[in-house]
Amino acid sequence: MLRMENVSYVALRQPIVFELEGFEVPRSHGYPLFALVLVIYFLVLLGNMVVMSVIAIDKTLHKPMYVMVCNLAACDLLGGTAVMTQLMVIFLTGEKRIPYNSAYAQAICVHTYGAAVQTILSAMAYDRYVAVCEPLRYHAIMTTAHLVFVILLAWAVAIILIAVLFALNVGTPLCGTYIRHVYCSNRSILNLACVPTPINDIYGKFVSSFFIIFFCYAKILSACLMRKSNKGSRSKALQTCASHLVIYLIYEIVSLIIILSNRFPQVPMNIKKFCTTLIFIVPPLINPIIYGFVTKELRTSIIKLWFGSPSRLGE
Image (cartoon, rainbow, N blue to C red; front, top):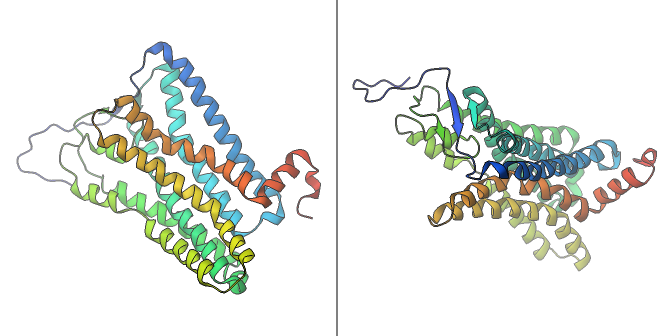
């Protein structure tokens, strides 16, 4: 608990109800924006549910890479649902108030999504590293038990990181209820704190698994270019990593857009707010398309499921 001899603030007491700033648009524009977000959310649900259902139904896709893709789709659904449902409520009803518990629930989902994306992509990079650099030992290494361990570890690391992040908020007094954002996040809530929160800020910037992903793909590239093998095997090895790298680059590009939009004060606030929502819209919307079109096995299974005989799957 925070103890101060000279308290110069009056902290809020429960029940606390926050109010989101949201987008600054005329009320008449709310319905078209609601319809737009609804369509996007429907496509996100459809795309990711199709990928997950096809992987679950088709026994030929019960492989480490596709099981991890299934987990990534579930993660995308978590992030997209956490933000887009809130946007739809705001656009449809104009209601921007959100209770304390709901605000923290949304913030936890938002940050869990961000952390889990990194850890799952790290697990996928590790799987591709083993597949390309240790092809003869791949099946011996990536057993079912090891796969379950890697996936559970990815989720556990993400959940623990976020649990610690929000545990640091316990006891932090709040002096305001107006959240200057379109959704709730750890930082937007801490901006309402009555006292500085340097430990929270440092820890929040520390959470990243960039170096794990970079190391795995650097080793993969080195193995493909330096190993004495024919061009066909090199090309095939690189193709197995193409979709993973594209998806990772999408996350990083969207994150860069968010950072750059906040570095220029002349950028309109609505544009800045819109950019912050892209991380919850673009990857969940595009990822199923990338895997559906780039990955031959998954594409074939989707075609069989929707246009062929489902009973033949897994034969």
